Length: 401
Ligand code: PLP
Image (tube, rainbow, N blue to C red; front, side, top):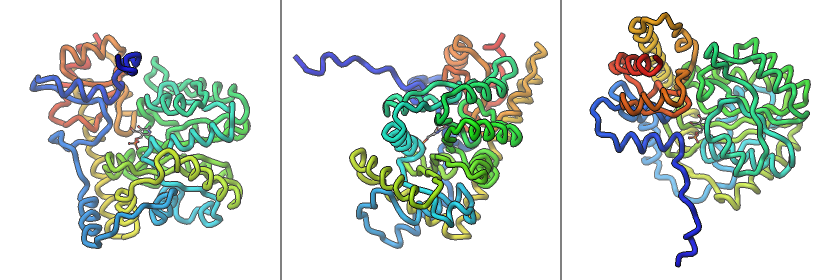
């Protein structure tokens, strides 16, 4: 008898499982709005032209495939911190940032979680309710205790700002407050600049550590600088900040697994020590990160022509999603005769829209309309085309009522 007999079947992943169910459906009108990956208007995956160019240049250079150092490609680590904090940010000049290349956003978050587990034993991470489903898995696997702060208000399909502030205030001093830098996943609801200031006030007052997950820099508004404003505001206050970055969405490098973890410290000496410990955590986990995505990012950012092309393509992608958002709102407003206010669709930002549909209504979306989405009511607008907006609006209205 197998010694693995006692291992039970794991449940499918709530996000990636949606794509599996979608593949198994043969209906011609089926729509996959589950996973957050950009699609063209023809609903095909998209490789950025600038990435193709960078790939070609890399091939011509014929670089070797030697191991990277544990902390990753130096040229990548330099530009990734500059993109996030701004190249002339004093924290960079003062060498107060510990930057380590990670396995995209997920792997970078996992490194930070391990650092918290090791050096802040017992400290809690506060995550928004709701949040990206994998956050809980990451902290559970790293054995970091977490609890939730209020974020989403179902009554307004907007931000529960008072609840958020009250819960951050009530957390034990020195907690880690996980914040989505921009384009909150799954709700698409971000605090206003004024609200960000108040959040920073409370975090500072309680001596908490702001811990940013920024997976959509440049992809939300189309501007790298605008989307990093929240992170930069905290840093400008002189606060110590953790920030995990991802290039999955803004460069379409999903499968290359390229991102970074940054820890802004109060001194260059602390930053050097933190970096040494992040490397120590990475070494037995995966030894060193993959090189290809790191070279692509470093080469694109390091060349002004390629960099401008990247920005133009990012604007194009963000623009397509905004167009789809408007069309969906128009379709919902004109088709729905119940008088429901759909303006929340327009107020949300980024790749997702939180529809407010409950689990039974989501089941109706999938079972009757062949629209695949996560059961929390989130739809990925990046997987929607203008041509499919009317069909989706019919499905949503039918499921609501
Ligand atoms: N954080 C958030 C909020 C996300 O939405 C995602 C991806 O969907 C990630 C992190 C990590 O993605 P990746 O590991 O591909 O960079």
